[in-house]
Amino acid sequence: MAGKKRAAFNWAHRLSGMIAYIGAAVTIFLGAKIPYMPEIIQRTGTGLLAGLVATHVFFAIIFEIMSCQGKRMYLPS
Image 1 (tube, rainbow, N blue to C red):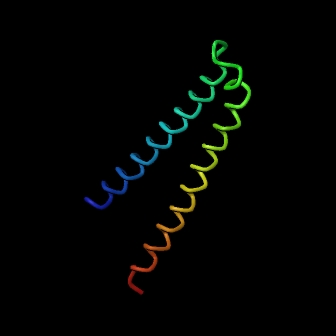
Image 2 (image 1 turned 135 degrees about the vertical axis):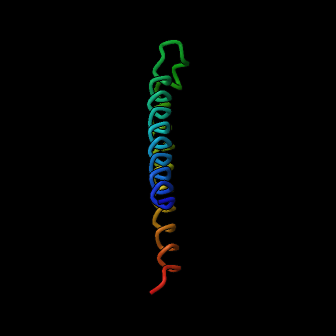
């Protein structure tokens, strides 16, 4: 029973973290387009932010793959 609750907690925690990250990224993208921001930020901000988000997603995928491979090594055959 405790294992099922822990798995549900892990998924809920992961989901809430992803939702928070997506919300933060959207907010930053919207903030870069505020009219009183300097022109250089309005022109280049979106590209830089897109690169930041893409890098984060890339490493999240890489670390998830590494985590799955590590778990597979320690599972009994």
